[in-house]
Length: 243
Image (cartoon, rainbow, N blue to C red; front, top):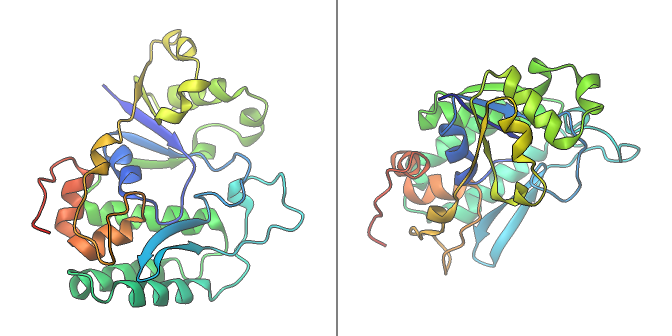
């Protein structure tokens, strides 16, 4: 059965984000919706000797309070070099730094000249999916429905119609949507709703710098475990490694 997930793009997201993509035949970047400040759209977490540290992409927020995610422009063209340097310093003692850091560098170099937040996020996610062996079709919401039509829809209605446009039979949702998502609207069109289970991502793996931190960027997983073990985690095949 064809499964779809519809989620806003995020900056170098955690391993659970990629696991959700891998479970689907189609994944839709939901970036025509309103940009939210201090959210996963523009930032993510790495580990350092001083504790967890946020890396934030600078965007032009003035006058864009109600703007959609895909209209947000990058404010500083040199931002990615500072982020790459922070990652290099934080993880140079990680077990797989030597073999995985060149991959991380390539990811940043592929998006270095892109002018918008969505292009940066989607570009990095697309490149990482290829590295991880994820063959899911990646689309933007505006590839499926007109922006103006979606803006006039109720939240669940918009997800239902995007799922139908993607020819889905199952809509995969994050657990936080249980408080507002109306499953009956999907059922009325012959679609089921499934809920993503992130519980297995609490399983510790060896990390640099102290106690295990679960909700970190996938760059942490890559640099500590390497590409093969990161792929195993995302695809649900990870059996643990010696700490």
